[in-house]
Image (cartoon, rainbow, N blue to C red; front, side, top):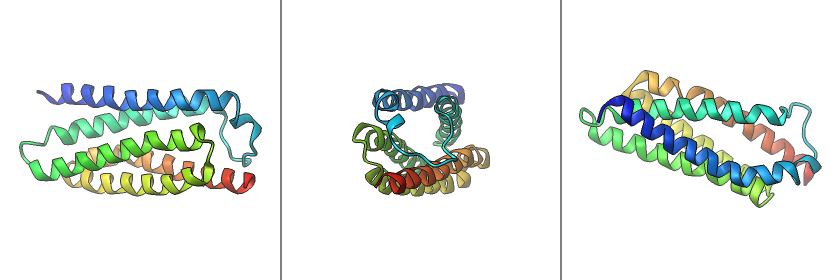
Length: 158
């Protein structure tokens, strides 16, 4: 299987995770989310879909690049992809906790773990391929911002 096929498979998986998270998110964005207090730096709702789409594309390309190195660095690639899968699962769980359960405090604890798993994935990816690691930097930054936003929402609504 060539690198492009691996990237496409990773893209399908990443976008499927994003879509599944949106199924939990969408109803709350229309009902619960508008009723809670948010900080002044809360972005408009329309910004989240394009940002997440770009981030999922970057993540998929990074995973495909790393996956393509499996023959040369088998153990390192397996570990890196395991962390990638863990952070992807945590990514989906955050939406369920925040929007599905409407529990910003639990989501805040989880997003801290998510950020750490993304960071660990970044460290593993960058050792295998620098471009793959660099592609995760916007994701790290966005989830860091999301954590601050999550904490602010929790604080304002506790």
